[in-house]
Length: 440
Image (tube, rainbow, N blue to C red; front, side, top):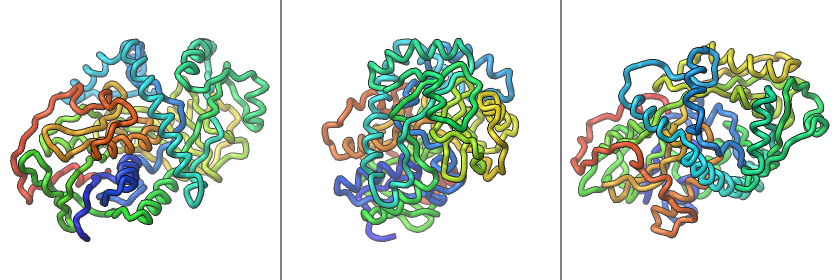
């Protein structure tokens, strides 16, 4: 390790890297500590579908979700699953989730997330405007397909409100859908189009972004395990790693689904649950979609990645396990066959699963973690992290710098739902942190 940096970011996924990007641009020296490889298969920034843009701003907690989720629980191939288990943290999370499933909170969350996504899209356009990152970002719009007339009619009724909040949705005529996707045969009742649909090519974006950060002077310590913290006088004084210790002025925990366990070692309770998602990457069929595509009722996304096609979906609350459920994978493939009956089968390149950190109300956790004076949290971006991380990193940088934030940070405050157990006790140097002994 070289000279101690101003700021240590724990976690090298897309959230941690964007925190480092904005902090470095603000003139701070930054080190990112990541136990695994940056963009490696253990990272949720590796195998997901990479959707960005203004789509997907509706919080997971919305009216009707609980009833729909209970019906899905009876189906082993459903898009949503909660593994039955006695887990007080999960039960508390589900209680807060149920409380957030109301029209008022959902509408407020939608407005907040739309603005975050708009600001993030602008940042992505700037970052990926040229150089090696240009080929890792595509922004040509996206299609939202609906299987049933009921779902399509409901979506059409919501279009005016979405447009009023800045999401450029429009209803596609059958001829327009055919013009956008001439090689695809759909079995759907209708479709919408979002001209601001965009996606990142993963994991290529992470690899190229990491190189950019190194060129900017950010220290990237992959393969480096944090084994403890030392705290005193309401400050994190030292970050202990298996490759030496760091004594930064500030610490940011951006460790994805492992953030809750990490923060708990500092007696901070985060209301987070790991939500497992799956993807199947195949050789791209000749009649594959040209644009990113969302199969709405099945919650399945399709992303074209050059000579590959990635199919992703599901939200499974089953703890920290990344074991692949073949039934969940088959549910994704069955949805694709139902919407695109003539999509030609091809060679499977990869079957992947990853953990996404989810909050009960669908809004990320961004800000200071009291009672510490130099600890910030950047986590809880859920299944839309790629579309929120670019601006979330900027907000963290503004908070740490004591600047006036571009947006009101109150909706993202730490501890808005859960309980915390602060302490100023010194943690022993030899005490290992088990969350970094697992994949993250």
